[in-house]
Image: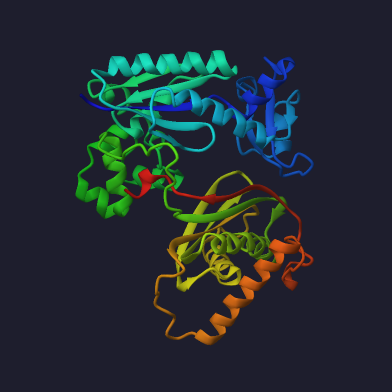
Length: 411
């Protein structure tokens, strides 16, 4: 008997939790916003009423307020969101031990050895009703034979709905959708596909494999498989922790920045946390990346290899700043930046050193970084700071996370 996969997506999660805990907010325009005291705090989640008024996730608070003057802005309460997330997953656990989180509000659920997809739909409906009745939240569930199509299904009907994408109907339901609806097709990939005349998921699915690989590389072959329902990725067992594939730290600036010295300060500040997390996880980075978000909320990401594996905040910041200097669009003010350490390797694995570099200096720098990190652990993160950051413009940290890339990306 075949396996089927559900993808559950809690509707407007942060906002829904706040409304659930304060019933007087029901039916009103509500947004959960980070750093509400700063001009560039951003919208993290919004109610459907706010969305209908033009409020968008990622908007600056002042832009959201301009679009919806009656908007009620609420500071995030992550402890509550974690509580509800665990509560909902306990409901999923009644039906499967294979539950793979995709953020706090989304999960894939494997239903093994069912007689048909109709039974999988029945279970999805049971889950939907249980979540609504026991938590007060609503969830949209996609039912399919692949992880990618299950996620597409959960996005098709919102809120509080179940969508089935089967082997019999996926060409009719999925293939007419715009290519950007497919998981991992971002703006840059969408533009590349459009240049090739590929605008829908169906056109991507029917694209010759050689052409996909030639124009988009390995990512093109992966996306073509996704569009054809051939991703084949498995749902991880509950409690499974995938290997950390990158470590990142991002922030939205209090004001738009443009000057190189301001950009450096933000990148170097972010890299302090990245280096700390690499030390805590006994990892080295063989590459660095930077994601730039401009004032209009558009953005681009870039990456490069490092000369040798490192966890030095200075090395990571230097690489990210170099990428930003070379690749950013000149003259466009930057609203947010994210720095990531990528191509991670364990720190006890022998690695090739930079033959043209100063190995002794690199070792001294590594010992210094570890000593600084230990002091910050003992006396707080502000006990020691780089001189170049002493007069840094304040930043509002809306995101700060260790990023384990989804298993589906690298299997």
